[in-house]
Image (cartoon, rainbow, N blue to C red; front, side):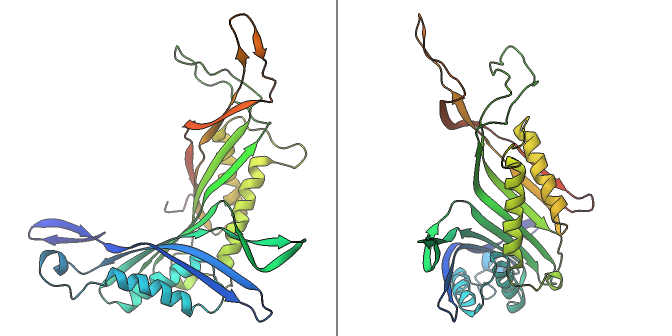
Length: 308
């Protein structure tokens, strides 16, 4: 927040606009359409203390103006661009256009519209809604300093074998049996920060960050599952999480740090027994899916020089 001393007291403030929804369609000369849907949140750190402590709104950027700016800037983007580039473009506008604004924070969630195939062919203007969401946050200062973060929300992964959990602490409250055979399911939330620290250092390549997002997702998924035939054994969610984070940093040198959250979504073995007999015996085949309660596992991994 913007910090100031007001009447002998420390005062912090920021203001912005939340959940601005915008869709943008681009049309190629060949007749193919491209669409994105974004939910934009804007937060400005600015010198507008008089609007709080005095009857003076002359330094305020109205939140309705912020909303309109989202639509205007989307219109100005004549070429397809990544959600990261749009976040940077918005943040750069607010810090350069308004002298009162010292820092702009733009957070965007992209809805996963995917092109459909009909009769084996990509449709020119037809899309279906996917699952996981692509996120981006750009923090831009008036000086041109930049902090850029991308992410994934709701990446649901499941494998039916090659997972276990053994050797954990046991005490009088422990009922969980050890196993080398269980289902492993999770919903990955990932955030990774790029090493670029100024607007001038951003790669000037079309859809660079979109390609990077798809690459990070592919590396994490491949690490989770392993090779198609034999897979890879997971001794714990913790170990799998670490390997996914490490593989991402190894593959992408311009990513400075990554944070992963992977709840352990349980599939409980079903055994049905009566007082006298076992009616149905579990044989790694019938489970009770349940997401409440679930284990919560998260960690971050960063390069030694990174400012996490």
